[in-house]
Length: 343
Length: 96
Image 1 (cartoon, each protein chain N blue to C red):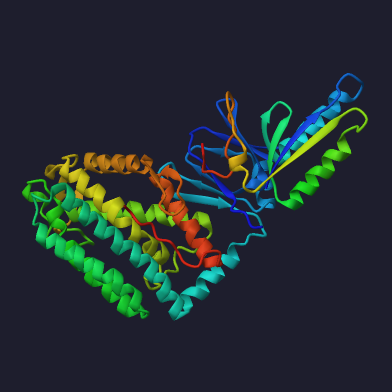
Image 2 (cartoon, one colour):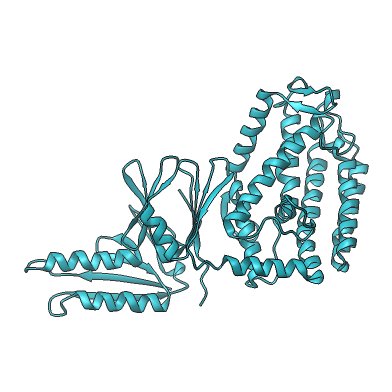
């Protein structure tokens, strides 16, 4: 019988992990908080100032337990893994899947389903919350369009057709995004998505949040042992984390877009916090950037129930859970990848 | 599967406390201590054989006793805890 082994996440600053017999022990301020037999753990993820004894590292390597070190914000730093890791097989399987056009399209469809469904949820929620203040009929039209595309996804097996659908959906979604901003400040009008550089405060905010998100998703993929560079929806390009961008799609609407809207609509960011450079690029000032970072970290602490695994967890762990589910799909343990569907 | 191991080791004679310590250590390597001489071990059949073999080699069958309760993989409905020191759910999310 195959058992799904657990991953230990250590987020307590100053924690010390050491080997005690065949167990992994976690000590916080001189008291042992947890002791786990090593055979029940598949991986250890340490956030920030967490130390691990060299003997435990060796013991983990021997037992195929991956140990990853991330900054407290979740930026990937390093991973310690033993010689006989199964990850090369996982990665090879990932490459094979990416090379096969049909599998590639099927996989891209999972990510797009997540993206479209979650974008639709964001719009529906705006209709519910601010239905009377916004152009509801325009938003509803886009909701219907996204619903159509969601059904349309099933019929398409061609990658280019899928990308076409995505493009159209994104265009429609950003077309009504301005309606979701109920702040009356002129500076926060949104006339469409632009980037590199972003030309208005809303785009500036979105770009920054997408960067944070890409970072977290990439770390999660690295930790799981997948190759973040080889994507399915996004074509390979040097330096581009294709798979991270793929997996980001499903997180963007409810994680980044909702957060941007909250920040603007609740007045946590102000128009004067944005500076326009000579090139026309809009940047955030120091205080605003800090405010956004704090909001993002706070958001990651919110506890939600994972819709597929039915377990309560902080939002920040969802990246790792989705990466694990994707790895299981690549390994063939799951018939499909369950994208994170927001309710 | 979950196996509950409980033991009674006679510590009155010479070497008794040594046996007790070694039995506890073997159990700790494979499971979680839920009460003083009671361990819950989440193991696969191979690991269980190794642990059982190790335990049988440690005790003195004339003086000590071991009891194994096989709770299978659907153990969740069969275990209830009341009072202090609830155990960690080793299959649940582990965040410290």
